[in-house]
Image (cartoon, rainbow, N blue to C red; front, side):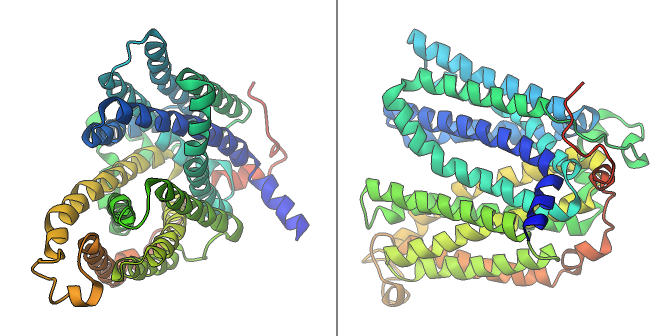
Length: 454
């Protein structure tokens, strides 16, 4: 067993070096984002302006990704990550300088977030597409589990670390911490040499940049199973967005803000545990079954969360829902990495990332108003459904959101059942061939130790 673990670590060493650096950078950027959120809310007292901070971090990613994808496939991915990490950090440095000068305004943060998101639109597909080059394909699920683990760790550490650093070194100290974390990530990237991606006809055919920008979408539409997989994954993120926007007002019906923070940390721990589980376990041999199973369970968990006005039931249900998210995301990513040629993964993953990035805020802007304007009035003491459904799940504040959760859960189970009946998605792992694994060849050679860049 010990020998097997050592073998796995040896085969994953290139990926682990890069992953550690990116984890440190993510903690730095998440800590800065937390501090900026607090600054904006304290400065304005506006929930709308607070929400716009996230919008300006997401919208550029959606808009720039189709352009970034073709360029990522053309460029060296390691160098793309180094440059993107470095340039994205400039926005944070500018914010820090303006803060020290006493001239920082809210619109500066919007602009800086937009600037950073543009470069992250290049970094994200480059990093995702590089994973398949850095380790043998049998470890893809473990690697993707570690990616979820990375986000879980940042969700837990960043708020706590941000609060401590704000009281000790203040905002300018957090900016310095962010810059140092990015520097560590860049150094980790210089310690490895990414295996070269072999060119194929599918990637080298001469075409206009416009056709290359739309290539990722065309690639998916000509492979309905992969398109269905991306849309299915996006639906999971839509649920995450909807649940996130419901959680805070629903929980505040039961407890204070301080307890809310503890509960939100529990959900971060669930994501961390889910990523850790996949990293150790490695996932099912057929990833699509893991996705179907987790989505069905998600439907059950969401229904349970809304059935009764109980903080314990809600917390346990959403904890279990959060626990399954890394399994869904890592299994989806493993299928994509196995089925998409490495030399076009930048374009395809850029489109995948744009679709998924759009799903999360879509959950915010649709579920939030539905809960506030439609379902809460229906389940009020004198609401239209108080005497019918209200006699089962209760009435009053929060019960409209509970009913909405039940409907979301039922639709999730129904949607998953329909998706199972779609053969292109169910048999996507059988109908599409696995791509060549460049690292499997490299790992079998004598040059499988970590090389320094010459």
